[in-house]
Image (tube, rainbow, N blue to C red; front, side):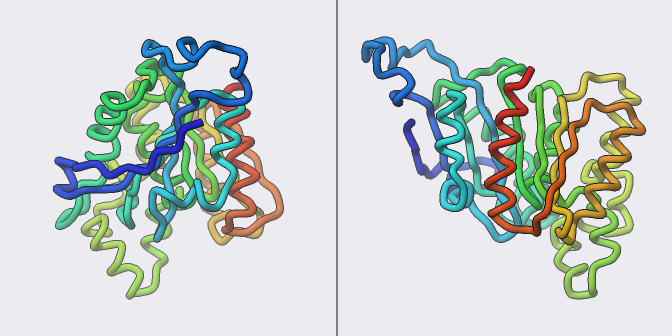
Length: 262
């Protein structure tokens, strides 16, 4: 594998931003091949866009899990951007993180690295805030991904914002704007799931996992049941665990196995 920690000048963010990328080149699985075969310029790798949680950055997954080893087993490229504390949203008076993540980042990564452009070879996943971001990206741009996964995701963002303490609610207002307009908006996963069905568009396969002791467990159950009622292809798993890297390291491997199970 090759691990690249790079800085990218973003038009939408109007600043430099960090991205960590894993590319499956020379490894123990293909040492018998010639160097010309290993480094073929026409090779295009299936790609997982992997999003971090609140207060994290582009290095979290690499530092706290064995994602490099798991990706190597499947010959999978992994793109891990920095999403700041944006909930992967175009903040009204701040960074346009949604536009950067969903539009600019894939174009930049495919221009620099040998990444597949096929829908069936593109996937998105994330934890907590990143689980919310992964589901939002998949439901708003279903033509881009064939599979999406959330681990301990902040999936019922309307309830989370409405039940927040005053100080926390002000923080959410800085990200989403007027809280009264959040329900039924493009930041409401329940609405996005309903709208995708109404538009009769093909949805990616969806995967949700959460620890049974996680404070976001009830929100994950509500969203899972909502998807089932709507007829989505949803895989749900749970196990003992809280909101921590022990759980996420275990389940990101299960996500990768699930991605390649079809």
